[in-house]
Image (tube, rainbow, N blue to C red; front, top):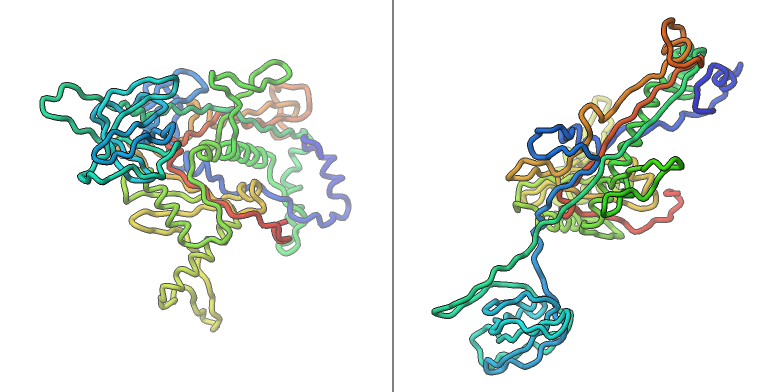
Length: 461
């Protein structure tokens, strides 16, 4: 059928003897991105004077992120000199970083060295540093495996008596992050003749409880569901077409810019720790927790959300069931006996706590569409910032602009039988749901993606 719902369409659709058409596929019931932002009251409406963010009447959102990165400097070439009997060792670095009296460690060999000269520039991207092995053994030598590409890291500094100089390590742990507010819209048209009969068509479609003819919602509900699905998918899977200067890559045929923004998955995929598995077990969840805790502000008391597709969720249930069985519990919570003597088996597992940190699981059907042949899950941090109270994720819009509902009334009015002023000579009406929205993951480094190997079994097809 065309977009406009008309009386004629549904009379042809039903006919004298309605045929069994099955139940029309409905839109997703759960909107994860909406739940993690609006449902948790993590919404910013870009109003002036609001604490925490400054409105600049723009579709652009920027924030600074403390990444807590540890500065590492690679070796340009293998060191020269053995270091025997406290001898000099020459190191070559791509930048002027280590200064006199600084101590650094070669991470792969765990050897520490102390710098005894000011760096000398030999050429572009090559600085010479003379150092000695830092230990109390004159027989120590530089590990012969040390080679170009080995990573080094600043440890500390030691200065002599009557010292006359010192240096500060300017380690930039702050990154500027950016996202945008996009616009979404869904319309639905109804003829003036169709609207008074809508309830009748819905009742006919219901049929009997065990023999439904088809499933039909009101036009208002279908339009709203379509808008919510479009916005949820954008908040999760959206890809930005904005360049570094804030200009869009895509324009329509009339030269109007189309602004799209990165969703949650696009924001975290660039920085997330990734695990690929063939067979899921509890060990993967514990490794994921370890990776998350290493990037979190505190070692315990963190809450993480695991968003997954149906295949991963079912695998999670099997893994947790095997885990509880292995712990030799009495198992009474896994079954119950009814009054009729029948036994109900099974349990549903919603979360997992390890080392004082908790993983909660939420299924999202749109992941099934994106990954129909893989088990997929994204683990994100929901713990608020301890200093500012800022949530880990937030929805951005304009005040009153998250969803805007408009009706363009034609002849017959909204009900199809109404008198009064109209906005169109056409005997029909149009419903419009549109709005502005964007999502920000304030620390995308605190995330883990778990993805299974592709399964081409016919069950998945």
